[in-house]
Length: 237
Image (cartoon, rainbow, N blue to C red; front, top):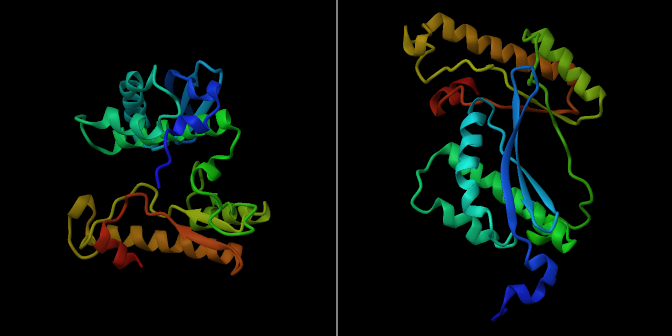
């Protein structure tokens, strides 16, 4: 089936909305965590917002957003596919530039929904499940957590559950890397066998404290935060 010209289905004012600015915005929580947003402006006065937070990589992502921005400025804001693919052709690959392009694309979808007066989820194909009116949220409770003892984790999890969250996400390793074999290999990745075992035992104690604090009705999610490779993850599990 031939659909014809896409712009025939788009209001004239929306189809001429050109991108005028693409800029990153990094917000520092002051608690060892930053959040990165991308703002896309158009000459129609409509603004779109995307998100690409990577914390330790936010400066690199922001730099890549600035590098990519000229490739989007002046182009039709509804030209999502081409706007996403064109600037990446011939450029380097890597985490930061891919995240930057993803955040810009999110902002462009936000612009599209606002211009067309249609929720973005409908533009992406509609509801995944019939009758789904609300999205479930969980609390990422480790960001900015000062008391990283098992008790501190448990207390924070209990607060999240009391606030109404039915799921909490734990980052039990807190930036410490443990690679496969370190549990029995002295000196690997700066941890001898005893130190690695202590790190893992502490992580297990944190997760256990969270489970005890929230009970069986709240889901506990575990994020390794690039701390373990595949084999070490199996060991930890």
